[in-house]
Image (tube, rainbow, N blue to C red; front, top):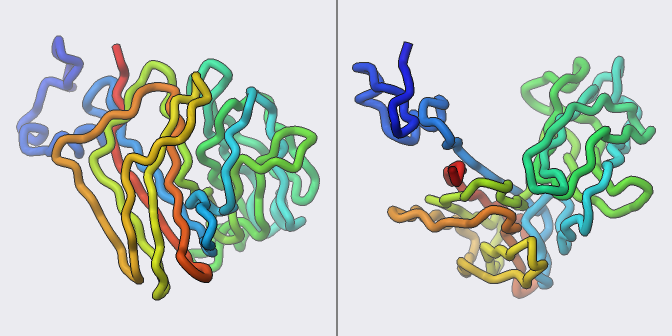
Length: 262
């Protein structure tokens, strides 16, 4: 069995010597480093700037840690229905530490998390009925939302049949730094679209700053950064888009490595 050397890296075997660093990170062979990938889709971006996520519009980060009400628009999203039965929620607590939990769905009746979330950046279905496991047309039957308890404010949602959130929204956890080495955007119609990668310091509640900006016209765009750029702990990140006229489906992705600061 491989052991960790003084740098926190597995002592390489003959096979590992031939592996790329990215593959070793994906396999969990480099201590304190993990792959970080976020992707989102907005089906109808308009002339006003919107976040690239399932719900669209202007995303509002929670002002304080709160329990979440998880609910579907369809009664089949509960055991023993044909849709989703349980969802895993991923986010950060009031100290920006990573937390997650599994919530059993109860259809159109609210199920509340046991933990308090300051940030929510992913939900995914973990178990489901006969329709949820289909390779095409499978997944959750209704739209599943995570809202602030007792409020209509939505922090994450899963569209029907998707099985997980599609949201270009993230906050770097405490004690970690995110190194971004690639991103991409895509628009699916013949429209002029402006896309942005933006972030802000969550601790100071600072304004969003645009770090990348591109214009698209019925095209995709990919960027790779030989020298990754860093995003510090507790920083909120979003991808946004807007059209010059009409509406257009827009997708976005970024890839990086999340590394422990110590």
